[in-house]
Length: 281
Image (cartoon, rainbow, N blue to C red; front, top):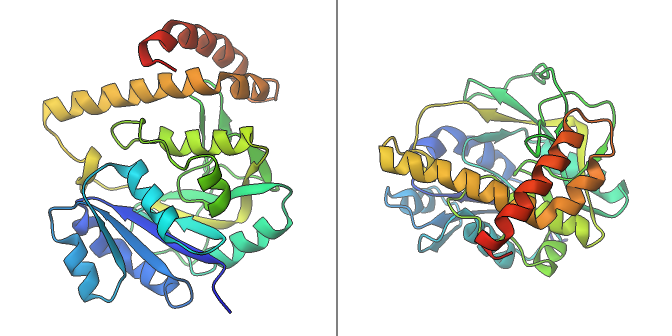
């Protein structure tokens, strides 16, 4: 019987990071198809992974959204689980997410808790949750490290989610207009899935570790002033683009009991009106 999911791991110039995290993915690959999408790395990432027997899809450098789309197109399973090169999964995560996806209504994407960590070794037990609110309406973000008592439908998730492949392709996949390979490209996909009638869920009892590190590399690893300025500009540009496109969705979510969302709706309404002409959307 064919596998119900494929694990897609996009990466760019981060072999030194993957050398620390690849063990987690090799453990998953014992049961699930794994595909690394190399976005035109210059550090020998693809050759090194091939020597380990890991399937690699080699691309010219086009950015993280394009790399994720290539993974969506290459997979042949109903579901894809996206990884990141500084995220560690436990071996139970795919089974847990598939079980949740099978019983959540209109599920187009589902993700577990994403807890911060300092070590490249998976802890034996689930780390303590952070204190705060899951949905931060002011910054249009979620904090997936905050404890939740039950499965919760949200307007967005973190990047390492189980995604319905055909649903994602039907709404156009990840939008490469989100320049700089920063976080809004996945938020935009989840928003379009929501507009198409799907739902996105954050679930308890299922967790991965996002390792805090200073190893650099990739699109965000440069310490040159010009690159830092360019990255900050892409953050702002992508925030504005997202707000202009999906203000209706966030206004709908501002009716919930999430701190800051009413102020966010008013602020982003102004931003959207001012910036639609600039970005042409």
